[in-house]
Length: 132
Image (cartoon, rainbow, N blue to C red; front, top):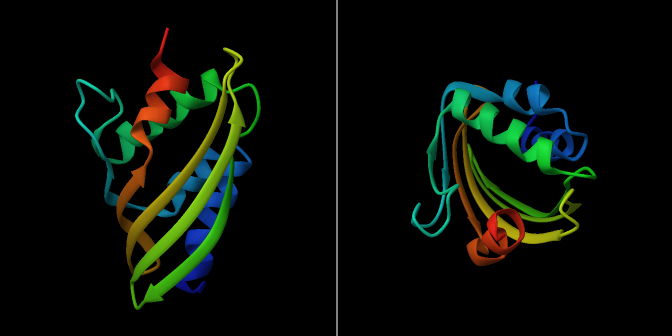
């Protein structure tokens, strides 16, 4: 069985390869993934379950020209709770370059990711993904 740090690194590796189904397979069926912000200002804000995450990943993939490469900078683990620093880089079909920095609080249970609290620059996301 993989240790928790490996599971989390595997998640972001699968993102980087556009392996959305593989990424979803690392999540528990009752996963809760939260994107910060106010939905009226950041349309992606909210709590996601597994089916809603799959739709989000598909919408992202449709808009990406290149893979969204997600590089894990650092991981700190305390049992089943992890703090993860990540940087991403990807180009959208609209010509915009998405360069994001994240912090994730991730919890696992029985080798599956159960909770993700994602922190990122929401204004940059709006400017790149949603601005006309």
